[in-house]
Structures are given as C-alpha cells and as structure tokens.
Length: 411
Ligand SMILES: Cc1ncc(COP(=O)(O)O)c(C=O)c1O
Image 1 (cartoon, rainbow, N blue to C red):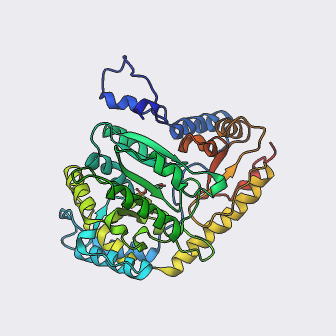
Image 2 (cartoon, rainbow, N blue to C red; image 1 turned 135 degrees about the vertical axis):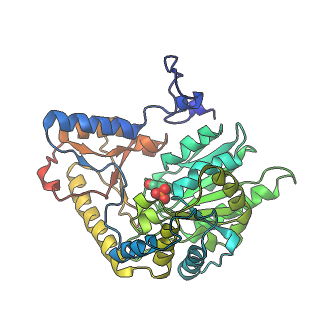
Image 3 (cartoon, rainbow, N blue to C red; image 1 turned 180 degrees about the horizontal axis):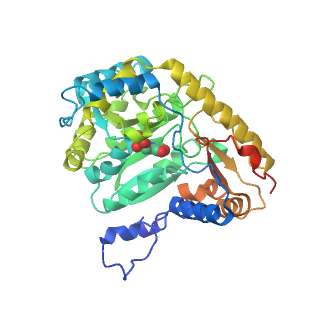
C-alpha cells in the first residue's frame, strides 16, 4: 500500500507551500482538527457550548498522594540533571515489581525502558525498523496515531480488519493473508481504542504462534516479524475484568514488546510517562533511535511512576473507575434516546456505538449531531476504512456530563 492509498493521508502536494518538507503532504486535514474547528465555529455562532464526546483525555484528577510525592522528588538535589537514557533504579524496580505482581511476568533489566508516553515509542518504532516500502499492520478500526510515524519513516500502513460479528477480535486466516515479506511488525491493541474490545489469553496465544511460525519460515538473514502490544488502557477496566499482558504467553518475549502508559492508569496524560517491556533486542534498536531525539524521562517523573507502581493507590483507582463507569451508564442512556447502541464495554475510555440505519455513514451522522444538536462524537471513519468504521461512532467518557440534561436528545 502506498502512502497515498492509506487513510487520512491523501492530500495532493501543495505547490504554493514554500516552507516545509515533502513529507508534510502526507497529512491531510485531520478529522480531529476539522471537528474542533467546526466546534469552535458553532460555539461562536450560537454562544452556547458544544457537548464534546470527542477526545479521550483522562480528566479524573490524579491521586493527590502521588502529586505530593512528585513535589518531594522535584526538590531533591539531583532532580534537574539529565536523567540518562535507561530507567533509573527506582523506576526499573517499580516496573519489574508491577509486572511480577500484576501479570506474574518476570522482567530483566534489559527488557524494559522508559518512554515519554506510549506515543513516544509509536513515533520511533517505524524509524528504527522500517526501510522504504516496508509495511506495518495495524487494526481497522484502530488507533489512528500509528499511521503518521509509519509514513514519516517511508513505510506503508497496512490494515487488518476487525469486525463486529467476531466481537472485534482478530480473524487469523485473514491476518495471515495480510502478512507479506515486507511486514515488519503488527500493532495489537486491547483494550482497544476505539472499539473498547478486550482480548483473552487464547487470542494472544494465537497471535504469538502465528508470528513465531512466520519467522520460522524465514531464511537466516531475512528480517523477523514482531508484535507491538499497545497496552495503553491496561488498567481502565470495569466489573472486575483484568486485562492480560501479552507477555503472559509463554514465548511471547521472543516476538513481542508491550507499551505501557501512565496517562490512563494514573490519569497523568499531561506528564508524559510510559514504558516499554519485552524483547530486549527490539528495545535496544528502539533506544538507538529514541536516544537521537530526546534525553530521557525526567528523574522526578520516573520516581513518581516508580512510587505509583510500588504503592499503587487502589482507593483512588476505585474512585476513578466508579466515576468513569457511572458516566458511561448515563451516556449510554442518553445515546439510546437517539438510537445509538453498542455492547457494554469491559474496558477503555470509550463507547463504540452503531448509528441508526437511515444514516449514510458515520461522518454524515457526526456532522448532523454537531450542527443540529451541538453534540460532538468522533465518526468511525477516523479510525479506518472497514465497514465498522462507516457505521459506528466513538463516544468518549472523559467528559463533564453535568449539563447533559440541557441538550436536546431528539433527532
Ligand atoms: C491506543 C492508544 N495508544 C497510545 C496512546 C498514547 O498514549 P500516551 O499518552 O501514553 O502517549 C493513546 C492515547 O490516546 C491510545 O489511545
């Protein structure tokens, strides 16, 4: 698939632009920026607020205990030094402790690295692993943030379909057919943005087995395939559901890394803290590139993350989950009034809802809701090309819904 054939990146070169590199032409008028411009216009014209279910920006305040700790760490005498590229001992031990306790997975020191958020790895993985024309497979519907970095690295985005009939789980026959000699890695994301679908040990085992069997058929010098498990929503789970880590699968470390984010787990999105774990060689290559671009994760932030992982504030987490869940239930009730329905999510910050049959597609539906009702949702088309993207919208639960009653919910 060439860049111009991939979603969102079909803008022709603009000859009038006298600044900027050619690669900027890959990025079309991003759906989120389009929606936010329209939102601003409507608010200006009507003088009234739009009820915005668009972004998944965790708004629940972080644990105060954690922020108190951060202010202690900021005052330590070495806080202002360059932090170094590897995890400082406290963060290393915190990650090891967390994986041991939460997933019964043992990690060695070279099987982990700090990140400035999961997106930090998503930005650099393609630069570390793709040559021109190489491919990355990502789920459709799936997180659109994977695409830009792949294109910047002269790679191609290949999509693997997830569909509703299969509960948005992988169809392995179809995924197998999508793997080519040019496929370098496969993104796997569960709990999923945008569908909120979760996974189980069986699905992940099949994925690990598939990648292992593809690699076994490769010749000695051929590039190996691997999995990037994006586990950003690992700890936003409901009703006692516990999301499994791909590293729980025996042999997964041979073919997988996993991205973790404190953005959702600890509601620290603005602080930019995450980490990657898993195959040490993949992490070493990723570090080689990343070290060219940034100088590591601020020491006080590493210490705060270490503290969170070793003294996890369960009371705080319970409150956060219960707040998200009660909002989610209320949101469900209101969206049912306009005939939007979907499965009860076991995890994530989103509801993935099917639009009524009489609408052409999710983009038309989202436009109508915004223009006529001052309610903003993200059309499924922002996440892929599959039929599920055409007839679903994503509704974020990171929203102040205190004024939800004030909106007209009749279509
Ligand atoms: C699926 C997915 N992966 C990664 C990220 C980025 O997470 P972070 O804030 O850790 O960079 C997001 C953010 O919304 C996401 O939805």
